[in-house]
Image 1 (cartoon, rainbow, N blue to C red):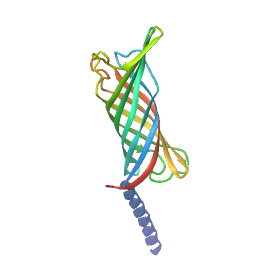
Image 2: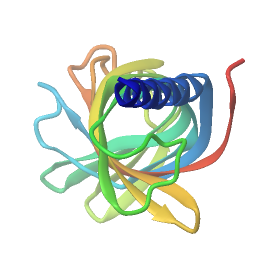
Image 3: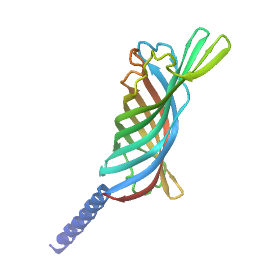
Length: 221
């Protein structure tokens, strides 16, 4: 009988410590910085031949674990998007700069959460969410007949670029341990739902690869 009580006591203590660790994890915020490359383009009925161009994203984010398997990720970024459109000898490269607020929900697949050090490279999570964007700048470079010009993407005031964008985002992440830190490499696909120009069926779309570096963690506010 005493052996059963001993086993039951050890199991209860183990479960209690595990629950306490999970509660501690849920009370913590993890702050970090992220940067990466984008391959943006346009899609839609009015952008049938749109090609991709090189873009970037850089910003800060805060993660809040919900439990051992799910985490909210809130960010604030500056992203450079756009596309290259070609028709015969006429081509236009559009560059759009946004300040973005991504909100994603991460579903952890394996390994410890990001508050604890990882020991090896491993697939970590799937994530899905949305991105709200405010346009900061819009420029275009046009090439025709061997000559080129650049300037505002709406020089005549007839295109009316949209000020806001809203996009669906989803992707997956891999963790890489590096000198006592856990780096998070993330692949993400985004699909915009607001017209780039108000009177044209042209929308943002991109794939990207970013690296997140945890900077510090702290207790809940």
